[in-house]
Amino acid sequence: MKLFGTDGIRGEANQYPMTPEVALRVGMAVGYLFRNQGRHRRIIIGKDTRLSGYMLEMALASGVLSMGAEAWLVGPLPTPAVAFLTRDLRAEAGVMISASHNPFYDNGIKIFAADGFKLPDEQEERIEELLNSPVLDQARSRGEGIGRAYRIEDARGRYMVYLKRAFPEKMDLEGMRIVVDCAHGATYRVAPEILEELGARVIRLGCSPNGLNINQECGALYPQALQRKVLEEGAEVGLAFDGDGDRLVMVDEKGRILDGDHLLAYLARDLKQRGELWGNAVAVTVMSNLGLERFLKAEGIRIIRTRVGDRYVVEKMREEGLRLGGEQSGHIVFLDQSTTGDGILTALRVLAVMRQKEQPASEILNLFERVPQVTRSVRVREKKPPEEIEGFSERLRRAEEILGDRGRVLVRPSGTEPKYRVMVEGEDQELIETLADELASYLEKCLG
View (tube, rainbow, N blue to C red):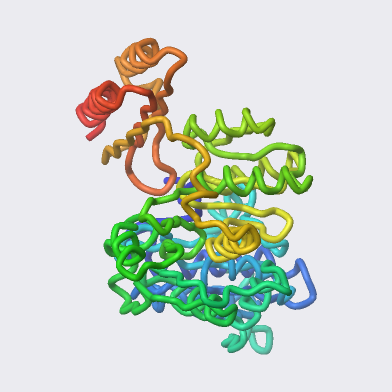
Protein backbone atom coordinates (compact mmCIF):
# COMPACT_ATOMS: atom_id res chain seq x y z
CA MET A 1 0.00 0.00 0.00
CA LYS A 2 1.33 3.43 -0.97
CA LEU A 3 1.45 5.63 2.14
CA PHE A 4 2.16 9.08 0.70
CA GLY A 5 -0.67 10.88 -1.10
CA THR A 6 -0.74 14.39 -2.55
CA ASP A 7 -0.21 15.88 0.91
CA GLY A 8 1.86 13.41 2.92
CA ILE A 9 0.51 10.45 4.87
CA ARG A 10 -3.05 10.72 6.16
CA GLY A 11 -5.67 8.53 7.82
CA GLU A 12 -7.63 7.85 10.98
CA ALA A 13 -5.46 8.32 14.06
CA ASN A 14 -4.35 5.13 15.81
CA GLN A 15 -5.40 3.07 12.78
CA TYR A 16 -2.95 2.05 10.07
CA PRO A 17 -1.14 3.97 8.68
CA MET A 18 -1.52 6.72 11.31
CA THR A 19 -0.31 4.59 14.22
CA PRO A 20 2.51 5.39 16.65
CA GLU A 21 4.39 2.40 15.24
CA VAL A 22 4.37 3.84 11.72
CA ALA A 23 5.16 7.33 13.05
CA LEU A 24 8.16 5.90 14.90
CA ARG A 25 9.48 4.34 11.68
CA VAL A 26 8.83 7.56 9.75
CA GLY A 27 10.83 9.45 12.38
CA MET A 28 13.64 6.91 12.07
CA ALA A 29 13.61 7.20 8.26
CA VAL A 30 13.67 11.02 8.37
CA GLY A 31 16.46 10.98 10.96
CA TYR A 32 18.44 8.47 8.92
CA LEU A 33 18.06 10.30 5.60
CA PHE A 34 18.78 13.80 6.85
CA ARG A 35 21.18 13.39 9.77
CA ASN A 36 24.23 13.66 7.52
CA GLN A 37 22.98 16.42 5.24
CA GLY A 38 24.07 19.32 7.43
CA ARG A 39 26.06 20.33 10.47
CA HIS A 40 23.18 20.40 12.95
CA ARG A 41 21.16 17.18 12.50
CA ARG A 42 18.05 19.17 13.47
CA ILE A 43 14.57 17.94 12.64
CA ILE A 44 11.72 20.40 13.36
CA ILE A 45 8.47 18.78 14.53
CA GLY A 46 5.24 20.79 14.68
CA LYS A 47 1.57 19.86 14.99
CA ASP A 48 -1.95 21.23 14.94
CA THR A 49 -4.42 20.96 17.83
CA ARG A 50 -5.74 17.40 17.39
CA LEU A 51 -5.83 15.11 20.41
CA SER A 52 -3.73 12.50 18.58
CA GLY A 53 -0.97 15.03 17.96
CA TYR A 54 0.62 14.27 21.34
CA MET A 55 0.87 10.56 20.56
CA LEU A 56 2.32 11.03 17.08
CA GLU A 57 4.68 13.82 18.15
CA MET A 58 6.29 11.58 20.77
CA ALA A 59 6.56 8.65 18.35
CA LEU A 60 8.13 10.75 15.60
CA ALA A 61 10.57 12.36 18.01
CA SER A 62 11.61 8.95 19.39
CA GLY A 63 12.35 7.74 15.88
CA VAL A 64 14.42 10.81 15.08
CA LEU A 65 16.41 10.49 18.32
CA SER A 66 17.11 6.81 17.72
CA MET A 67 19.02 7.79 14.59
CA GLY A 68 21.21 10.26 16.44
CA ALA A 69 19.45 13.37 15.13
CA GLU A 70 17.94 16.17 17.22
CA ALA A 71 14.17 16.68 17.53
CA TRP A 72 13.20 20.34 17.89
CA LEU A 73 9.57 20.49 19.06
CA VAL A 74 7.71 23.71 18.25
CA GLY A 75 4.21 22.70 19.42
CA PRO A 76 0.93 23.79 17.81
CA LEU A 77 1.75 26.02 14.86
CA PRO A 78 0.48 26.33 11.27
CA THR A 79 1.99 24.13 8.56
CA PRO A 80 3.65 27.15 6.83
CA ALA A 81 5.29 28.03 10.17
CA VAL A 82 7.01 24.63 10.20
CA ALA A 83 8.18 25.21 6.62
CA PHE A 84 9.54 28.64 7.62
CA LEU A 85 11.17 27.44 10.85
CA THR A 86 12.91 24.60 9.02
CA ARG A 87 14.75 27.23 7.00
CA ASP A 88 15.05 29.83 9.75
CA LEU A 89 16.57 27.42 12.28
CA ARG A 90 18.87 25.85 9.69
CA ALA A 91 17.29 22.44 10.21
CA GLU A 92 17.83 19.48 7.92
CA ALA A 93 14.09 18.73 7.66
CA GLY A 94 10.71 19.65 9.12
CA VAL A 95 7.74 17.44 9.97
CA MET A 96 4.18 18.68 10.42
CA ILE A 97 1.58 16.49 12.16
CA SER A 98 -1.79 17.47 10.73
CA ALA A 99 -4.69 16.24 8.63
CA SER A 100 -5.38 19.82 7.51
CA HIS A 101 -9.15 20.29 6.97
CA ASN A 102 -10.13 16.74 8.00
CA PRO A 103 -12.08 15.99 11.23
CA PHE A 104 -10.25 15.61 14.55
CA TYR A 105 -10.16 11.81 14.42
CA ASP A 106 -7.89 11.89 11.36
CA ASN A 107 -4.26 12.92 11.37
CA GLY A 108 -1.35 13.11 8.96
CA ILE A 109 2.36 13.64 8.47
CA LYS A 110 3.87 16.15 6.02
CA ILE A 111 7.63 16.46 5.54
CA PHE A 112 9.65 19.48 4.42
CA ALA A 113 13.23 19.52 3.16
CA ALA A 114 15.85 21.96 4.48
CA ASP A 115 14.79 24.59 1.93
CA GLY A 116 11.22 24.59 3.28
CA PHE A 117 9.67 22.92 0.25
CA LYS A 118 7.69 19.69 0.53
CA LEU A 119 9.69 16.59 -0.28
CA PRO A 120 9.72 15.54 -3.94
CA ASP A 121 8.08 12.23 -4.83
CA GLU A 122 11.36 10.35 -5.06
CA GLN A 123 12.33 11.21 -1.48
CA GLU A 124 8.88 10.22 -0.20
CA GLU A 125 9.28 6.92 -2.04
CA ARG A 126 12.68 6.42 -0.40
CA ILE A 127 11.12 6.94 3.04
CA GLU A 128 8.45 4.35 2.22
CA GLU A 129 11.15 1.89 1.17
CA LEU A 130 12.97 2.39 4.46
CA LEU A 131 9.95 1.83 6.69
CA ASN A 132 10.10 -1.95 6.32
CA SER A 133 13.81 -2.17 5.63
CA PRO A 134 16.42 -3.62 8.04
CA VAL A 135 18.59 -0.62 7.15
CA LEU A 136 16.96 1.49 9.87
CA ASP A 137 17.49 -1.09 12.59
CA GLN A 138 21.10 -1.51 11.59
CA ALA A 139 21.65 2.26 11.61
CA ARG A 140 20.42 2.92 15.18
CA SER A 141 22.72 5.17 17.19
CA ARG A 142 24.25 3.95 20.45
CA GLY A 143 25.70 5.47 23.62
CA GLU A 144 26.54 9.14 23.25
CA GLY A 145 25.29 9.07 19.68
CA ILE A 146 21.62 8.95 20.65
CA GLY A 147 19.89 12.26 19.86
CA ARG A 148 18.43 14.93 22.15
CA ALA A 149 15.03 16.63 22.07
CA TYR A 150 14.41 20.34 22.64
CA ARG A 151 11.24 22.38 23.11
CA ILE A 152 11.63 25.63 21.11
CA GLU A 153 9.86 28.28 23.18
CA ASP A 154 10.28 31.22 20.79
CA ALA A 155 9.02 29.44 17.64
CA ARG A 156 5.71 31.34 17.56
CA GLY A 157 7.46 34.69 18.00
CA ARG A 158 9.90 33.94 15.19
CA TYR A 159 7.02 33.12 12.85
CA MET A 160 5.11 36.26 13.80
CA VAL A 161 8.12 38.48 13.11
CA TYR A 162 8.48 36.82 9.71
CA LEU A 163 4.80 37.45 8.93
CA LYS A 164 5.01 41.10 9.93
CA ARG A 165 7.69 41.62 7.30
CA ALA A 166 5.03 40.82 4.69
CA PHE A 167 3.02 43.85 5.80
CA PRO A 168 4.18 47.37 4.78
CA GLU A 169 6.27 48.84 7.59
CA LYS A 170 4.59 52.26 7.53
CA MET A 171 1.07 50.84 7.42
CA ASP A 172 -1.20 49.45 10.14
CA LEU A 173 -4.72 48.08 10.60
CA GLU A 174 -5.72 50.61 13.24
CA GLY A 175 -9.48 50.71 13.71
CA MET A 176 -10.28 47.92 11.27
CA ARG A 177 -12.81 45.40 12.62
CA ILE A 178 -11.88 41.89 11.54
CA VAL A 179 -13.65 38.65 12.45
CA VAL A 180 -11.20 35.75 12.58
CA ASP A 181 -12.26 32.09 12.54
CA CYS A 182 -9.31 29.82 13.31
CA ALA A 183 -11.23 26.52 13.08
CA HIS A 184 -10.01 25.67 16.61
CA GLY A 185 -6.78 24.83 14.80
CA ALA A 186 -3.14 25.75 14.53
CA THR A 187 -3.67 29.49 13.90
CA TYR A 188 -5.71 30.02 17.09
CA ARG A 189 -3.02 32.15 18.75
CA VAL A 190 -0.88 33.48 15.92
CA ALA A 191 -3.59 34.93 13.66
CA PRO A 192 -5.50 37.02 16.25
CA GLU A 193 -2.31 38.17 17.97
CA ILE A 194 -0.58 39.43 14.84
CA LEU A 195 -3.68 41.28 13.64
CA GLU A 196 -4.09 42.90 17.05
CA GLU A 197 -0.42 43.91 17.11
CA LEU A 198 -1.03 45.64 13.77
CA GLY A 199 -3.90 47.60 15.35
CA ALA A 200 -6.99 45.72 14.25
CA ARG A 201 -9.97 45.13 16.50
CA VAL A 202 -10.29 41.34 16.32
CA ILE A 203 -13.48 39.40 16.99
CA ARG A 204 -12.50 35.75 17.57
CA LEU A 205 -14.26 32.59 16.46
CA GLY A 206 -12.90 29.04 16.60
CA CYS A 207 -10.04 29.99 18.92
CA SER A 208 -10.70 27.55 21.77
CA PRO A 209 -9.24 24.19 20.72
CA ASN A 210 -9.90 21.18 22.95
CA GLY A 211 -8.37 18.49 20.76
CA LEU A 212 -11.76 17.37 19.45
CA ASN A 213 -13.32 20.44 17.83
CA ILE A 214 -10.82 21.26 15.06
CA ASN A 215 -12.67 22.04 11.79
CA GLN A 216 -16.00 21.20 13.44
CA GLU A 217 -18.52 23.32 11.49
CA CYS A 218 -16.10 26.25 11.50
CA GLY A 219 -13.12 27.63 9.62
CA ALA A 220 -12.43 27.71 5.90
CA LEU A 221 -14.63 24.69 5.11
CA TYR A 222 -17.64 26.03 7.02
CA PRO A 223 -17.62 29.85 6.76
CA GLN A 224 -21.34 30.29 7.53
CA ALA A 225 -20.72 31.23 11.18
CA LEU A 226 -18.15 33.76 9.99
CA GLN A 227 -20.69 35.24 7.57
CA ARG A 228 -23.19 35.75 10.36
CA LYS A 229 -20.61 37.27 12.71
CA VAL A 230 -19.28 39.73 10.12
CA LEU A 231 -22.80 41.06 9.54
CA GLU A 232 -23.66 41.06 13.24
CA GLU A 233 -20.51 42.99 14.19
CA GLY A 234 -20.52 45.31 11.18
CA ALA A 235 -16.97 44.17 10.47
CA GLU A 236 -14.99 45.26 7.42
CA VAL A 237 -13.91 41.70 6.63
CA GLY A 238 -13.85 38.14 7.92
CA LEU A 239 -10.95 35.66 7.71
CA ALA A 240 -11.39 31.88 7.94
CA PHE A 241 -8.45 29.48 8.19
CA ASP A 242 -8.45 25.70 8.09
CA GLY A 243 -7.07 23.39 10.79
CA ASP A 244 -3.40 23.70 9.83
CA GLY A 245 -3.51 27.30 8.62
CA ASP A 246 -2.42 26.92 5.01
CA ARG A 247 -5.81 27.96 3.58
CA LEU A 248 -7.72 31.24 3.68
CA VAL A 249 -11.34 31.96 2.80
CA MET A 250 -12.63 35.51 3.26
CA VAL A 251 -16.02 37.12 3.82
CA ASP A 252 -16.63 40.71 2.71
CA GLU A 253 -18.59 43.29 4.72
CA LYS A 254 -21.80 42.29 2.94
CA GLY A 255 -21.41 38.65 3.97
CA ARG A 256 -20.28 37.27 0.61
CA ILE A 257 -17.87 34.31 0.74
CA LEU A 258 -14.67 34.81 -1.24
CA ASP A 259 -12.66 31.68 -2.04
CA GLY A 260 -9.14 31.21 -3.37
CA ASP A 261 -10.16 32.05 -6.94
CA HIS A 262 -11.44 35.47 -5.85
CA LEU A 263 -8.24 36.15 -3.94
CA LEU A 264 -6.07 35.06 -6.87
CA ALA A 265 -7.93 37.37 -9.25
CA TYR A 266 -7.43 40.32 -6.92
CA LEU A 267 -3.79 39.61 -6.14
CA ALA A 268 -2.83 38.81 -9.74
CA ARG A 269 -4.28 42.05 -11.08
CA ASP A 270 -2.64 44.09 -8.33
CA LEU A 271 0.77 42.54 -8.99
CA LYS A 272 0.39 43.04 -12.76
CA GLN A 273 -0.52 46.71 -12.26
CA ARG A 274 2.63 47.10 -10.19
CA GLY A 275 4.74 45.33 -12.81
CA GLU A 276 5.58 42.62 -10.26
CA LEU A 277 3.76 39.57 -11.64
CA TRP A 278 6.63 37.29 -12.59
CA GLY A 279 6.15 35.60 -15.95
CA ASN A 280 2.87 37.50 -16.35
CA ALA A 281 1.18 34.26 -15.29
CA VAL A 282 -0.57 32.54 -12.38
CA ALA A 283 -0.48 28.82 -11.58
CA VAL A 284 -3.83 27.31 -10.58
CA THR A 285 -5.24 23.79 -10.42
CA VAL A 286 -7.78 22.16 -12.70
CA MET A 287 -10.42 22.94 -10.05
CA SER A 288 -10.20 26.74 -10.44
CA ASN A 289 -13.36 28.28 -11.87
CA LEU A 290 -13.75 29.14 -15.56
CA GLY A 291 -14.77 32.61 -14.45
CA LEU A 292 -11.29 33.16 -13.03
CA GLU A 293 -9.69 31.94 -16.25
CA ARG A 294 -11.80 34.30 -18.36
CA PHE A 295 -11.05 37.25 -16.05
CA LEU A 296 -7.29 36.67 -16.08
CA LYS A 297 -7.23 36.31 -19.87
CA ALA A 298 -9.12 39.59 -20.20
CA GLU A 299 -6.46 41.20 -17.97
CA GLY A 300 -3.73 39.84 -20.24
CA ILE A 301 -2.53 37.35 -17.61
CA ARG A 302 -1.63 33.78 -18.55
CA ILE A 303 -3.16 30.94 -16.57
CA ILE A 304 -1.25 27.69 -16.10
CA ARG A 305 -3.24 24.74 -14.74
CA THR A 306 -1.82 21.91 -12.64
CA ARG A 307 -3.00 18.79 -10.85
CA VAL A 308 -4.95 19.30 -7.61
CA GLY A 309 -2.66 19.86 -4.64
CA ASP A 310 -0.62 22.87 -3.56
CA ARG A 311 2.61 20.88 -3.97
CA TYR A 312 1.91 20.63 -7.71
CA VAL A 313 1.14 24.33 -7.90
CA VAL A 314 4.48 25.07 -6.22
CA GLU A 315 6.34 22.69 -8.53
CA LYS A 316 4.91 24.45 -11.59
CA MET A 317 5.69 27.88 -10.12
CA ARG A 318 9.32 26.89 -9.60
CA GLU A 319 9.56 25.45 -13.11
CA GLU A 320 8.03 28.53 -14.75
CA GLY A 321 9.57 31.19 -12.48
CA LEU A 322 6.21 32.45 -11.19
CA ARG A 323 5.49 34.54 -8.11
CA LEU A 324 1.80 33.77 -7.54
CA GLY A 325 -0.23 30.58 -7.59
CA GLY A 326 -2.92 28.81 -5.66
CA GLU A 327 -6.05 26.75 -5.36
CA GLN A 328 -9.76 27.49 -5.24
CA SER A 329 -9.78 25.97 -1.73
CA GLY A 330 -7.74 28.91 -0.43
CA HIS A 331 -4.13 27.74 -0.69
CA ILE A 332 -2.34 30.83 -2.00
CA VAL A 333 1.42 30.73 -2.59
CA PHE A 334 3.71 33.78 -2.82
CA LEU A 335 6.98 32.24 -3.95
CA ASP A 336 8.88 35.44 -3.21
CA GLN A 337 8.09 35.00 0.49
CA SER A 338 6.99 31.44 1.21
CA THR A 339 7.52 27.86 0.08
CA THR A 340 3.94 26.70 0.67
CA GLY A 341 0.41 28.01 1.08
CA ASP A 342 0.06 30.33 4.09
CA GLY A 343 -3.37 31.58 5.16
CA ILE A 344 -2.13 34.33 7.49
CA LEU A 345 0.43 35.61 4.98
CA THR A 346 -2.28 35.74 2.31
CA ALA A 347 -4.60 37.64 4.66
CA LEU A 348 -1.90 40.22 5.39
CA ARG A 349 -1.15 40.71 1.70
CA VAL A 350 -4.84 41.21 0.88
CA LEU A 351 -5.44 43.51 3.87
CA ALA A 352 -2.44 45.65 2.90
CA VAL A 353 -3.87 46.34 -0.56
CA MET A 354 -7.32 46.99 0.92
CA ARG A 355 -5.81 49.47 3.35
CA GLN A 356 -3.81 51.16 0.64
CA LYS A 357 -6.78 51.56 -1.72
CA GLU A 358 -9.20 52.46 1.09
CA GLN A 359 -12.04 50.57 -0.55
CA PRO A 360 -14.37 47.98 0.99
CA ALA A 361 -13.75 44.32 0.35
CA SER A 362 -17.01 43.99 -1.62
CA GLU A 363 -15.76 46.47 -4.23
CA ILE A 364 -12.24 45.21 -4.80
CA LEU A 365 -12.53 41.46 -4.28
CA ASN A 366 -15.57 40.73 -6.49
CA LEU A 367 -13.84 40.92 -9.85
CA PHE A 368 -15.53 38.18 -11.85
CA GLU A 369 -18.73 36.20 -12.14
CA ARG A 370 -18.31 32.56 -11.20
CA VAL A 371 -19.44 29.96 -13.70
CA PRO A 372 -21.78 27.62 -11.75
CA GLN A 373 -19.82 24.66 -10.43
CA VAL A 374 -20.95 21.62 -8.47
CA THR A 375 -18.82 19.00 -6.76
CA ARG A 376 -19.77 15.55 -5.53
CA SER A 377 -17.67 13.33 -3.25
CA VAL A 378 -18.10 9.57 -3.52
CA ARG A 379 -16.63 7.26 -0.87
CA VAL A 380 -15.15 4.17 -2.53
CA ARG A 381 -13.52 0.87 -1.55
CA GLU A 382 -10.69 1.32 -4.06
CA LYS A 383 -9.42 4.19 -6.20
CA LYS A 384 -9.07 2.83 -9.73
CA PRO A 385 -8.08 5.21 -12.53
CA PRO A 386 -11.32 6.43 -14.20
CA GLU A 387 -10.37 4.83 -17.53
CA GLU A 388 -10.23 1.40 -15.85
CA ILE A 389 -13.84 1.59 -14.59
CA GLU A 390 -16.00 -0.35 -17.05
CA GLY A 391 -18.46 1.88 -18.86
CA PHE A 392 -17.37 5.07 -17.13
CA SER A 393 -15.41 6.59 -20.03
CA GLU A 394 -18.51 6.51 -22.23
CA ARG A 395 -20.59 8.30 -19.59
CA LEU A 396 -17.86 10.88 -19.07
CA ARG A 397 -17.55 11.51 -22.81
CA ARG A 398 -21.33 11.96 -23.09
CA ALA A 399 -21.31 14.60 -20.31
CA GLU A 400 -18.47 16.48 -22.00
CA GLU A 401 -20.31 16.45 -25.34
CA ILE A 402 -23.46 17.85 -23.71
CA LEU A 403 -21.52 20.75 -22.17
CA GLY A 404 -19.35 21.41 -25.23
CA ASP A 405 -17.08 24.45 -24.87
CA ARG A 406 -19.43 26.07 -22.35
CA GLY A 407 -18.40 23.87 -19.44
CA ARG A 408 -16.03 21.28 -18.00
CA VAL A 409 -16.09 17.91 -16.29
CA LEU A 410 -13.35 16.74 -13.94
CA VAL A 411 -13.30 13.34 -12.26
CA ARG A 412 -10.40 12.40 -10.01
CA PRO A 413 -9.55 10.19 -7.04
CA SER A 414 -8.83 12.16 -3.88
CA GLY A 415 -5.18 12.25 -2.91
CA THR A 416 -5.96 12.33 0.83
CA GLU A 417 -9.16 10.30 1.35
CA PRO A 418 -10.79 7.08 0.00
CA LYS A 419 -13.04 9.16 -2.25
CA TYR A 420 -13.63 10.24 -5.82
CA ARG A 421 -14.33 13.89 -6.61
CA VAL A 422 -16.70 14.74 -9.45
CA MET A 423 -16.75 18.39 -10.56
CA VAL A 424 -19.04 19.69 -13.30
CA GLU A 425 -18.98 23.30 -14.44
CA GLY A 426 -21.37 25.05 -16.80
CA GLU A 427 -23.86 27.86 -17.22
CA ASP A 428 -27.01 25.75 -16.61
CA GLN A 429 -27.21 24.95 -12.88
CA GLU A 430 -29.86 22.25 -13.25
CA LEU A 431 -27.95 20.52 -16.05
CA ILE A 432 -24.61 20.40 -14.26
CA GLU A 433 -26.21 19.06 -11.08
CA THR A 434 -27.90 16.31 -13.09
CA LEU A 435 -24.65 15.36 -14.86
CA ALA A 436 -22.68 15.40 -11.58
CA ASP A 437 -25.26 13.21 -9.87
CA GLU A 438 -25.28 10.71 -12.74
CA LEU A 439 -21.49 10.35 -12.75
CA ALA A 440 -21.30 10.15 -8.95
CA SER A 441 -24.02 7.51 -8.81
CA TYR A 442 -22.26 5.35 -11.38
CA LEU A 443 -18.96 5.59 -9.46
CA GLU A 444 -20.73 4.62 -6.25
CA LYS A 445 -22.37 1.65 -7.98
CA CYS A 446 -19.03 0.41 -9.38
CA LEU A 447 -16.66 1.20 -6.50
CA GLY A 448 -18.76 1.92 -3.41
